[in-house]
Length: 118
Image 1 (spheres, helix red, strand yellow):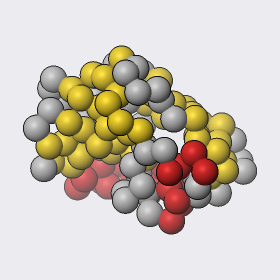
Image 2 (cartoon, rainbow, N blue to C red):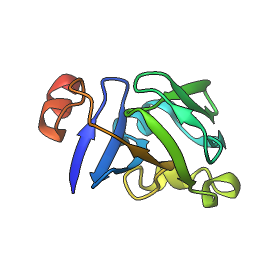
Image 3 (cartoon, rainbow, N blue to C red):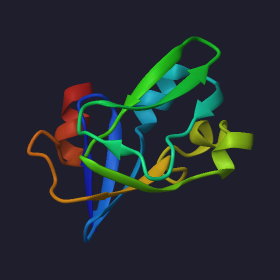
Image 4 (cartoon, one colour):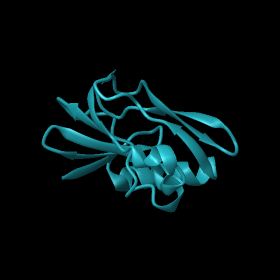
C-alpha cells in the first residue's frame, strides 16, 4: 500500500489498481464542521485533478477533486447520514474507491505534502 496526497488536499491510498480516496486532515480542519457530502456515483468516470464530488460545511461548499483517473467502484455510504465523521478522522473516513491505471506524477508523499503546509 502507498499513500499519496494531491496539492488540492485529497489523499489516495493505493493497493494494486484500487485507490481509496478522501480529504486530508488539514482540509477538514479548514472546512470546519462538515454537514453534507454529495458522494460521486458508482461507475462514474473521473479524471485526476478534476471534479469528484462536493462537501458542504458550515462555512462553504467545497469541490473535491479526484487524485487519480479511473472509475468509481465504491462509495462510503455511511457518510451520507454522518458526514461529520470526516471531521472526526479524515483518514479513516474515506469518500470513495477508484479503480485506476497509474498514479499521477503530480501526487506527493505524505512528507512532501506536509512540507507544503508549513
